[in-house]
Amino acid sequence: MKLPAEARGVLPSQRLHEAIDEGIISAGSFTIPRRNVQPASLDLRLGEVAYRIRCSFLPDRHTVDVKMKDYILGELDLHRDGALLETNRPYLIPLKERVSLPAGMRAKANPKSSTGRADVFTRVITDESYRFDEVSDGYDGPLYLEVVPLSFAVRVREDLSLNQLRLSVGRAELDDADIRSFHEHTPLLFDRGRPVPPDRLALSDGMFLSLDLRGDDSGRVGYRARDNAPLLDLTATRPADPRPYWEAAEREEGDRIVLSPQRFYLLMSKESVQIPPSLASEMTAYDPTSGELRTHYAGFFDPGFGYDPQGWLRGSRAALEVRAHDVPFMVESGQRVCKLTFEHMLEEPQQLYGASIGSSYQGQEETLGKHFLRPAVHGIPIGAEAVDADELPLPGLTGYPG
Image (cartoon, rainbow, N blue to C red; front, top):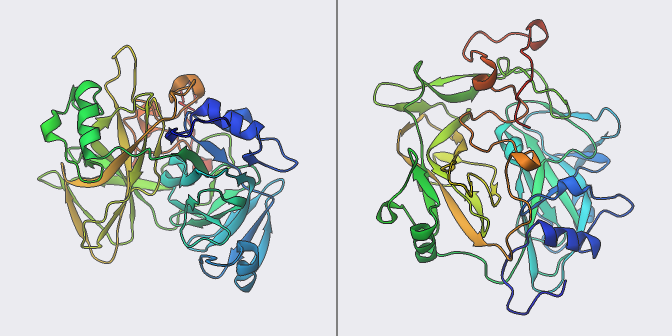
């Protein structure tokens, strides 16, 4: 790609198009749609078949194709209407895309935000690897996606995108001093519309975000996945009514909630985040050493998230995917629960995250993903008794964001 030897940073959209043209990313006889190229990542597509496997694994010194033969329980055809994936069952799906990375180039994968918000756990596996979601420098080979629906059984099919790939070269990461310095002249974090003072940033190998558990007038602070929900069709062109899938998560006195073990929650960050065109970001899971809490299963924040060159938009709040493990776990408003890391872009992307490219979560105030109708837009009361969505008169979709 004629990159200079000292090049460092995440490849922007125009460079991803170059990588596709030059075969660094390819899909065999299939064409990679241009719309799958995002400002700093590429949407990867499911292939033609899904393998139901009895356990997750890493190939280590073997290829995935050889290693998985001992674990296959069945095969599902993803053509046409696709297939149903059951909850808490691991599936391995060859992706249509493969990579042939030149020396010095590496890649990283993460679930798409809408995938994480539907509580579908995904991670990429590559040949002869001992790590998930990381594609080593110079790797030449296929990509496989492990998929585990956790709260809802889901329908998927060929060409559906559940995760994304980011390419980078050189040392791209910002350390804590870099983050603080950058924030001083271009704010990265806002609280109630005002930049957080640099000396109040919580930094430790990244920038921490905290929970907003003040809630709305009814006390709702987010959503909790219902037990025994109906099938969620991820291939549907029309978003689903959320009531059969979600119930309201409400605060207790003192702006706190107690998380029930193994239940999945969608909550909102207290602060708003701005990712300027020269940076890319990733939200990482945060373990507060006790091992009782897992936050955020989906990770990439593209350049332009929460960003407005005119300054009208002061960041966008982040949706947080939260699950307590073995015991009930109390969290309070303002408690730090996740962390953003930042990387330099190789160049500013020619397209930025936002409405102009159909991005779903710019300026979001609701945590539900794009597979569900948004209560704030459509006036759907969450917390009522679950009902069959087919029995409900759904509101129109005028203004539905993406």
